[in-house]
Image: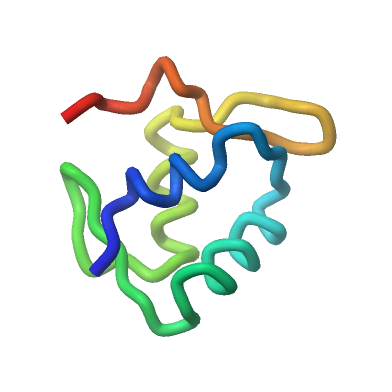
Length: 75
């Protein structure tokens, strides 16, 4: 399983839509990879995107959104 922090790190400096983020995650980690966070585990890529969105990890950027680095835990 891949930690969600790896996805957030991948997002830094880039802008995504939900669809383009899903595609980027699948391209980097594979279609069958599962993800975990500090509060959830065994998430699909789509479930991870929903989780991160619900927990305020994204901020608007040109053409979509990017990671809000101020809301990424540092452990």
